[in-house]
Length: 106
Image 1 (cartoon, rainbow, N blue to C red):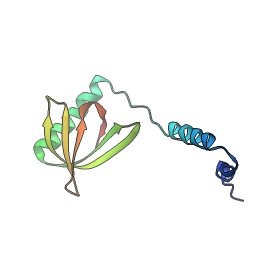
Image 2: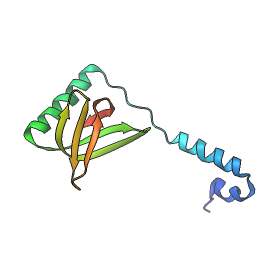
Image 3: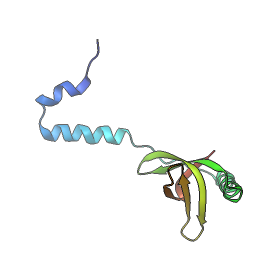
Image 4: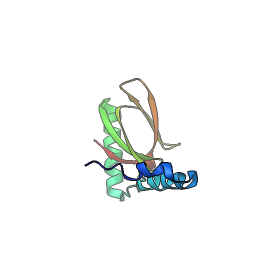
């Protein structure tokens, strides 16, 4: 038996209650930003620099808007003044990623 959960009851609820449930569900999906120590940051920095200089494809996992995202592509530019990395993915879209949001490089 497959139960639809609270979906089957939404027609009996006030719109305010439905909105509150949606907000609660979206807050449950939020992710806490991973915290890295100095050694891990140094390793990430070295991996990004090596990929940039050797023009290698890398996978960067980063945190944005309470979500963990990832991009696979080539580092096109490292901007130390604005603390950004520009990554071009396979669809030729250039993504700007702040240094402080990166938590893993593969």
